[in-house]
Amino acid sequence: GAGVSQSPSNKVTEKGKDVELRCDPISGHTALYWYRQRLGQGLEFLIYFQGNSAPDKSGLPSDRFSAERTGESVSTLTIQRTQQEDSAVYLCASSYRTGSANYGYTFGSGTRLTVV
Amino acid sequence: GDSVTQMEGPVTLSEEAFLTINCTYTATGYPSLFWYVQYPGEGLQLLLKATKADDKGSNKGFEATYRKETTSFHLEKGSVQVSDSAVYFCALGSGNTGKLIFGQGTTLQVKP
Image (cartoon, rainbow over all chains, first blue to last red; front, side):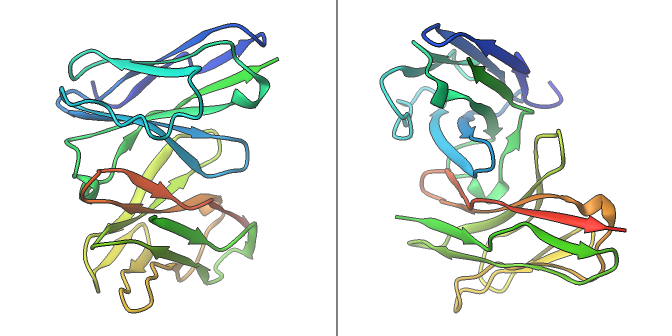
């Protein structure tokens, strides 16, 4: 597609429920990243995928968070048993390849998650 | 580990004023440096970048020079407009990992 597409754009969920966020990267982009942005704060790295390599999960805040990616296409970020501190905007980005930080990323518009 | 530090905001300026947003970094190796902008209600957009020391990135009247000796990448614009009101993020790119490490963001408010 023309850009990075994320869905849903907004999600309100009850504490304790599971949620699934979707990211559709730019076609041809082999690297995909998830970041979290809490209100008024910077971007917090969560996880990235590069092709068929094992993902770098070093940023995931707890075992309630997990992510999958099918080949070099869609990725889903799952948060189990949501807590109020999970409320944030979850941003997805893609780039041509890992190590291509020289090129920067293209970000999606994000999913705003509110846990009530 | 690698890190980025930005000046705290909000920065409030009158239209046509000169803008500087400070950014310094700590990194091993030779990272690339970026400024991203987030307009109200929108996603992050790449504003400009520099990939090696002494490079100057520029876009939409904004400039930033990669200063290795001072480990800085300050954002400047000679004459801001109301439409420049946004949150600006400085970021460091690791060539090895591909990760971007972001500063906390600086909110710019430009008043007419």
